[in-house]
Length: 288
Image (tube, rainbow, N blue to C red; front, top):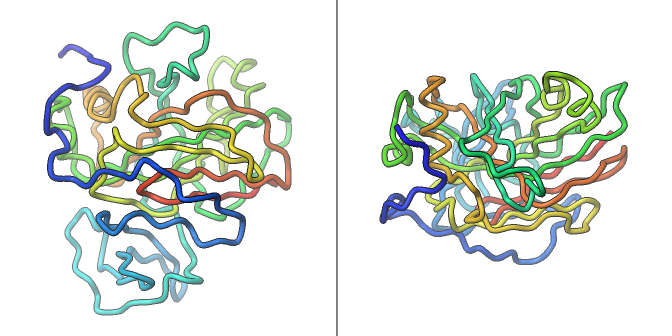
């Protein structure tokens, strides 16, 4: 199967709501995560009574589900306020894939890849909205990388780009935290990309979005550092999901970080980094 950078099938995401593509002002630490338009459903995981629950957001309430939303799990009949809820990472992936150099603005002088250049981040690197990004000993050059993240909803193996959208449950915000000194100094990227807390994810999963029509903004202490439309991805979502499925079986709840735009810079303890994607919300983490 030939690898194409961008699918051209009309209607591949037909019938889904298009993200607004605009931002409605800045978010500051302590604010509630920005909500998407009413056309998109939102699903999350919370901690309640000492155990995790999946839920569906309806207005200012969370309707608890009996299981993961991609299974068609029924509502339990219980609901809790969204305000003050303890958010967890919104899914429990068996694998976390991430894409290198998927925006020309980030590739810089490097050649644009001929195929998707995926790598693996460990599930143990995941951290929730408002969780801390912890800079580990031995590195002093840890960068943010704001990214759109795909959440798989249906088992995928050897699927085509045309089939890929049916296997995608929704999208969330991610931060592919990276230790640049380890990334350049080590042979493998295991600690540069997969140290504990190096994969912030959340705050929730939004469905009913066209991943080609979103806008990504990354802020560090309120200053915009990255901004790009997701249509600038070199390899779009169907191409990434299809390519990954040829080599690994993608399972419901698995995630793919789709790449970061532009340039990045060092974070230091005390910084607050926010990744905002139109139609989804804001992922916020403090660095320590």
